[in-house]
Picture 1 (cartoon, one colour):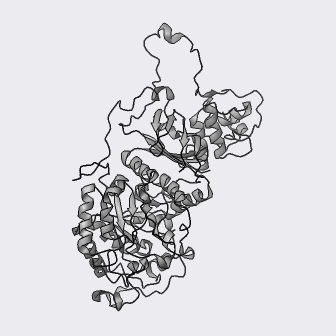
Picture 2: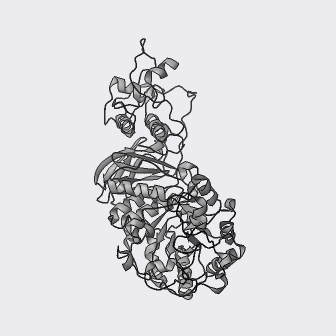
Length: 579
């Protein structure tokens, strides 16, 4: 099972236990100023929190729900397009607009959008507006007059090869492709963006962004967007169509982008009751994690027909919630939560209809509160006991892949969560955290969220020099009981006759090195499992003479093909012979 583990320092348990939560002070999360009587703890910056997609909601309906949205911990709300659609009624007409201007549509009018922005600021909530800029309606008789000239449009024809980057940026996707590299076209869109900014909009989401070229491809559209000065992200469905990692890195110089690959993979694993096999997609390919947007589902995966990508519409809400719990708790990337429409039939989903308010549920709100409370704190991602686990400096989110309830024991990855007793915000259950493991009971959602709002104390390595004063008589006496989580000591010298015992990391001796071996090592450290003498030799992955959490981490890095995996996957005989 592949895992992505951050390179944070693994600390000695004896020193970790000496620190109290409030021993030293660090900067708290940067929260926004508000004019309400309640501080909802929302970060000032959009990029530090999560986004609620009020898909199809009227502006006034969003406005009436702002208090509940703030209480649920969402930093921003994303609306559907404010541009006038070709035709009223069905949701998809808003994505075939007549031009770049604010006008009445099924969501409301200009003054209602402005009123929403003004009211949202009182709660510290930012408003993000969906912008359709790659195309307009296919009926060019309805578009704004100054863009009717054919010189403002690409004439390549329909995209037939989705791996041809030129086709993707110049071809039609049902409507003719707008020539976004044209300076006049950019000036028209910029005027619209600045108008949205003038009435209080705080950010933009660009529909079909992969169909708009990058500056490296001769299109300065997103450079123009950046000059407007508001946070923005682009919808990149699947891959951009060639030179994928290179193109994604180019986009993120100017805007954030969606990671649909990882989002879909995680939701698919939750659907199948499996822990995820990766901790990212574009992030592992070198794209800045702070520029990524995740989602358990989006309106594209819900409102479209199955053969057009609408694959999540028939999944139970709790599956999406489990996926969101992992995605929304990550340290750098953001997550978007969809307010589901009332119908799964594409033709029965109408613009202006208020969607589900399930975003207020305890499990969703707890994830947002967790993210907001731990802004800027590090992360380590792992799994164990059938659960996906996000450990942060200050707490953790534990999610059963199958949605199961009951007691579980999972790794405290990189010893990131300070040992102690925590309360799960979802159920109120207690979780016990040690240097290596975290144990508690999951409720019926299969989601646990626990953290401390106290300033985080980063432990340091124990001193290597002996103390200058002699120990007292009390400290020279042997303890009456052995510590319950002491690392298992293994032989440091090779036997006289070196035998080929197997592969380093194969702790369960099944001839494979996989996540089961890392889990077994973690359980052995906690005295929940026993290793054979041969297994002990194979489990000492970093050859430091003992079995500890570092060995399990090395296996996880080996499975993720990361550096720092030490001897994992190597022949035991070869490793010993080379010493």
